[in-house]
Length: 310
Image 1 (tube, rainbow, N blue to C red):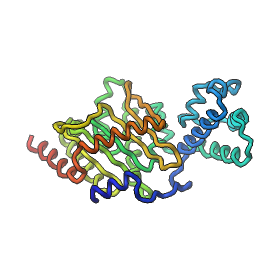
Image 2 (image 1 turned 45 degrees about the horizontal axis):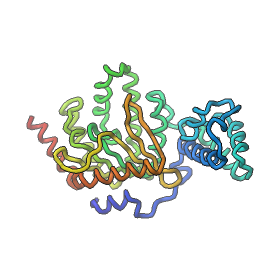
Image 3 (image 1 turned 180 degrees about the horizontal axis):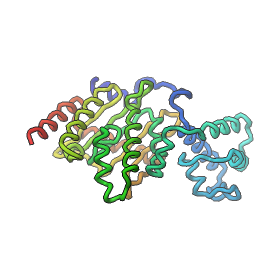
Image 4 (image 1 turned 60 degrees about the vertical axis):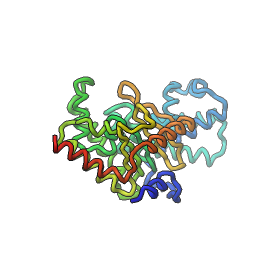
């Protein structure tokens, strides 16, 4: 696949398929969609979170997490009360939001992610409905590109510091492999453009054998029509950004979202246009500095040969 065609796909210049209710919209996306609409209605009503939650039986913190899609609104009665407070009287609008509430409460594979990390469920859910993902990883291979052995070695390295259990590691690796299926699913696989720092590839995780397998996996995935991988060499002059970040294009039905890794193994997420725009510009600067995508496979072969020579 040519570099020009890859860039055209990521920019969205080709016609985009409409979201199909049965195919891509799962419970997490419904929850996010409902939350966004509730936040919009509250802002239009000129109410604070404290005012909206008063006497409702839920805290303003929980209501805020409902609005960001992090938590479901458990009772339809709470929804009706909020809509009344916000001045929503159109019966069709109310019925639509109640249907969203009903659909957002069912279970899906991302529900087990909350047993790994409280933020994992929300991020995995947003990621699972993305149409396109742009990601920068300077020091470790992006999770969506990792092999099972590489992912296991990463979690095992942190086991001593985080005091995690074997069960936690197994669940974390299982979640990572499930997320990876977004790239290879038969229907509407997500479009990924990943930029990896050279350090992410040269740092030996697990063993040389694990790294050779990881190089081969990245090369194989980069051959998919929906996956582009670039490498940013350490010696290359140009723009750098110190932390991992991911920009998720949710296809227009939901706002684009940026996720940034922060301290304590947590993630920060925002759908504010200013923040999404800032990180999108950062990604474009990194893309301009990195090797062209058509050099990725040969460079990975070179790295693998270096390991053999050592």
